[in-house]
Length: 288
Image: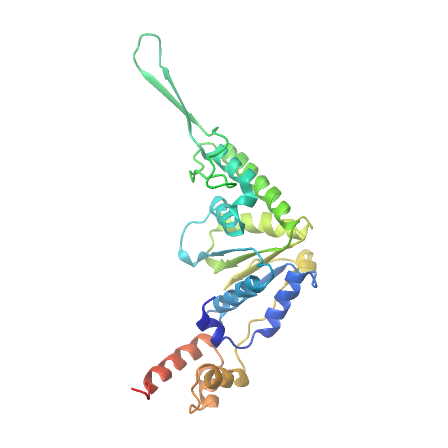
């Protein structure tokens, strides 16, 4: 998290405290859903929560994926990102499984005796992987390319199973956190994988040390069966006191009418930040 965001951060203490309780196991909740319209400071809050992970001793591993980048993230890209963020050395069996499923094995043979033609067959059967360093197996970073939907699903199942097996081994040594931001832009198939695997494993008690934070204008619609493990804190507008604190103490705008700006922005963090930026720019630097 940037020093600027930390310096300007106000409010949200209740949410941060609840998150810390989740990390420490003081709460039975493991899934935090933060849903709000744009401009309410969701991404800033996620950055703050990541900073809290880094402050733990030792630093708590976390994986972060923001879907606002517009890329077509599928389950494989999420698995690879989580592996790399959480420490690739903890997921060597997973990487071997990925390489076995995505590596290309080519057989060349004559089409018929004496014809001179060559028949090429390709299949995903390459196993293992090279070492990238002392104890990390190198990912070939190929994609799963098969014509059969059933084969694709079988490969997805193998990779998913390997991922959660390695994740459980990691969680046996301590908590780990997943952040999914701008969730409304996640592809539908990706949402199904996250909700049907990551969240489902938590609900069923199979990932007792995992914490998941999902933020966006849209978040998963979970019914009462998820209540025991899910927290839905409200991300509300800043009140007049926090607006005054932000303007005067965080931004150094001691001469502004905080009440007027509060009424003008209705406590919307994004609007307030833009107004403060403009006011700070207009005031200039008295030393020059």
